[in-house]
Length: 178
Image 1: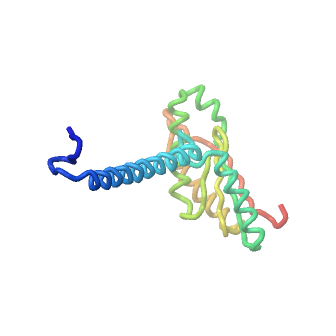
Image 2: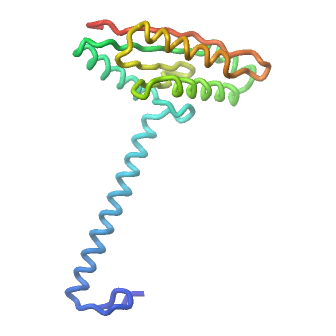
Image 3: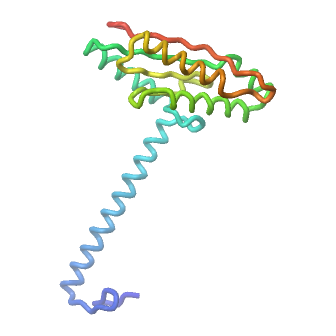
């Protein structure tokens, strides 16, 4: 409980009380600004992240793709992409339930994250579709990456009746003026 003219147990003059108030106000503004910045950063991250898979969402991965195409075409460097689509995903949800479908999506997302380079980008393109952007990667490099991912998905997770999930993978290298 503060009384007029006192800060804590120390008595101060009115002039030093003003300084103290100014310092406290500056501290409050700094803390509030830091909290707002942290909250804005978290909101920005949430707005760009798919809630289920924790990968980039379609809007974010699409804008990254557009930026990369522009950048790599200007520098005439290779840029490849991999699109992955789980087969018969509706059947998985209908047969085993949405919880199993969600687990399948999270498993695939984890495989993608673990099998790309730190500067590659992975995102959830649609319901059961995923897009990988591989900057500086030729078509041959992208094919090798797709094969590595295919092996990890095909052999790493099974449906409750021990069937494997199946999926389709497309690989491309962006061509100049595309």
